[in-house]
Length: 245
Image (cartoon, rainbow, N blue to C red; front, side):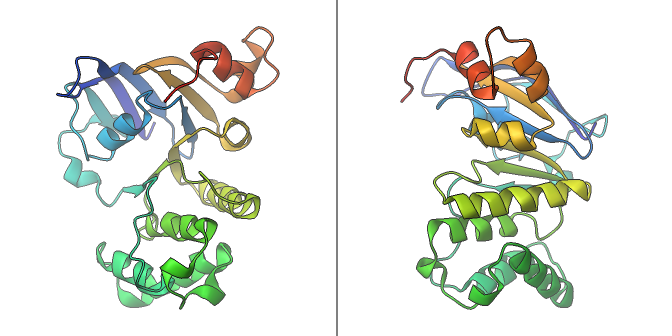
């Protein structure tokens, strides 16, 4: 087990409603865990606490079996790919990645090697010297992903990494993630894409109103949910059909 979350709770000062209510999840070594839920379900709050960007009111995190007391010790072991594009629009793709790579103090030869390999893997090497603000949404998403993993984290955390992009970019990202996972990288990602989660996730945790409703493999969730033909059916059955804002 690379990461265990135990009974995490969080309430924001602006509301009395709990954003997280005793949430527990496990992420195994070389495992992809999909965190699925409607808007406002608590997904981003949970991953921000895991990444050390927020503090929990209650609960504990365990890294490789030991209680986590200092998030600074995890900085080089975690990678975060935010939902918002975290790139400098007036720098080229290569300049963005080169600068962000320096923040992890990766030596220049190794940094440039990793950047080139990732750009080639995601079919962006020819565009490496173009400004980011000239890129399509799908191209920006691919660069955003590379930026979060240049230091080769043990656990890659992604918040909606394929939201709003074209089919080809989505497929390229999925294949790239599966390759990294096959090499041993564990992953946690939030998504609204049920088909995507069903395709690439070993485990899925469905969250709503700050509570984990079910957690299991996609196959088991489908089998154990009456009338479900796919993960989307399971999701709707658990969270309801009402629209969320």
